[in-house]
Length: 255
Ligand SMILES: C[S@@+](CC[C@H](N)C(=O)[O-])C[C@H]1O[C@@H](n2cnc3c(N)ncnc32)[C@H](O)[C@@H]1O
Image 1 (tube, protein in one colour):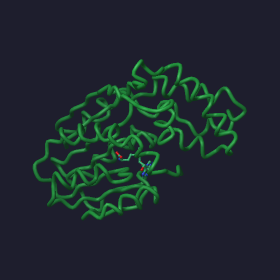
Image 2 (cartoon, protein in one colour):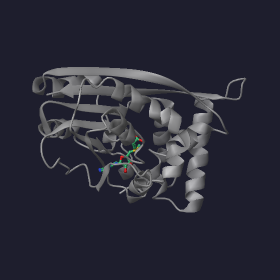
Image 3 (cartoon, protein in one colour):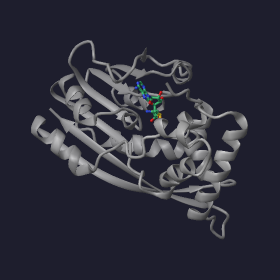
Image 4 (cartoon, helix red, strand yellow):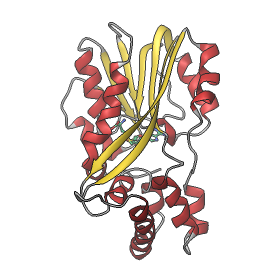
């Protein structure tokens, strides 16, 4: 199980919040009563769900005690539940299952999403955002760095180079099971500051399970290798800023 570092993850809090808001804004529900945020992390988006529907019973679900501890410290009227999403089900059919930047950590999407739809009441919605940047240098450089060092055999089992499917595959999985379906992709152009900020970005998420396998010296060497690749792919501009194009996939399925 990946250990999360809430502080590193929140380094790019504003950039990571934007897709959460874009997803929330498109949910076509007036007054859902039972609302779940799957892979709620530090609870930033969970709070937004509660703010939009103050009368709803909102529950944030996550498997990371570090992330949930940070979420609890927000002190909101929200239930925080520690659970593994690969076996999670709501206690009773619910109105909204929301998930921002989490379900790409789970395998078998052909099974996962039909299963989640079954947890909804008729008229309930499944609203999901996942990164879709796995063919861009931010992510292909990870595979390159894995292949280029003595750590290859150890790291390969811990890296899923293509955890998401194409949008058309999600359409095929979801459409026969729902009354309406909205799927879209957005590429955000994040303008980042600092010395090689793409490394700092991925260190807060996708690199975590890999770095956990390496000792301190190896982790430094791996980050140098990866860092050199992404610096070349995303050189800073004249203003010293680094632009990171980052594609994300969204869907909202209403039963
Ligand atoms: C990138 S963070 C996103 C957090 C939050 N949704 C947000 O938008 O800020 C991904 C979260 O998914 C959680 N997660 C990943 N796999 C999980 C699993 N199998 N069960 C429960 N939570 C999981 C992680 O612990 C982490 O908090």
